Length: 356
Image (cartoon, rainbow, N blue to C red):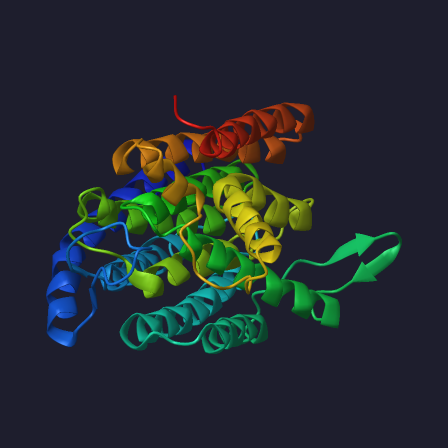
């Protein structure tokens, strides 16, 4: 298929997912009020000051699933694609099943406040389900040792990969619009990387995921009228992790793993620093606190909107680095990555400077 046609379809799918997300979010807000999915600011970690509906993940998942269904029935089934599309579509559907399970676990946590061990076990179970259905780290070779997609090593890495990315997105969901925006930027960058490598199922599904997140964003940007909740954040993280590894390609393992890590640089650094901070203080690494990057930015007086926009900018730089990396421009990718790291470190060091 001509690249122009692929680009047209991509834009249409993006608009479709955004539109469905915009339409479904008010419905999710009404459902939240009816079934008690309300985030009440009852501790000092909350950045909001009044109760807010936290069932926006429902709108995101409906926007994604409906758009994927339309894509599969009207686009992927109609045209002849230059790769093994049926296998990729099966994996995409498997990822969606695992993502729905992850959403349910997150929604239960929003309603019942699960213990972190139970929540982590549920996340691992969702990843196992996805692996069993075919969503797996591609085969790879390290130091002469070859690992197939059905090997125990692939199983362990797949589960760790999905759980890690899921928690990264969940942990940055602390400022209005942050998780939705960063997830949208990440999905757009990974989708474009897939496009230039001819992985159109990954391209379309990532663009749809970006659209679902961006359709929710107008209701979630500060001052937020709706939160996505743990269900929405965990669904976005799961789908980013799962979709990024479903397409076969040259250097598939490197592209599938390194590119998302680059584009998700902000949550990667945030989680790494959080684990280090909690370990130094002798606290459990999964214990919640108010020391995340977005909390610190708000604390020094930058404000929610500017903090989120700054983190969008850093995520954008990371996204470009991921795209450049998939074009085998490793030096340029490293340069962009270092620029983003410098910005993050400047913000971190700025926290500890006394005010004049």
